[in-house]
Image (cartoon, rainbow, N blue to C red; front, side):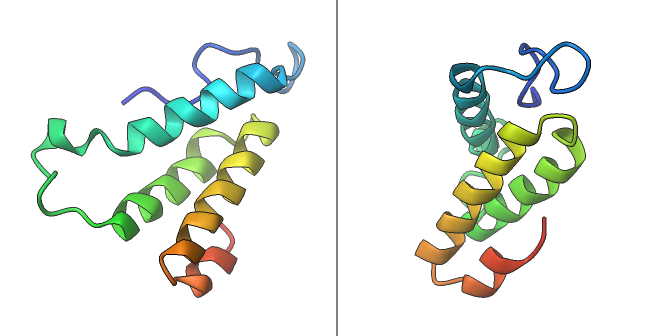
Length: 93
């Protein structure tokens, strides 16, 4: 799966990505979380499992992209809240 941020300028060294580029990377990352049909998991995976996997990936894959990372942490946190999982929303990624 393609990691978010594969095409933008890195946050360190080459300058921070633009807000538009960060928004595209956030969208690509979130869409990538739902590529479970390619893995044969579409009928068995839960929304919480997708969010948990996304939260793990944010920490591992986006440490050099703080703007994208912050937006995704906020978005995934909101999704946890909408699912009634407030405790997960408050955990550090």
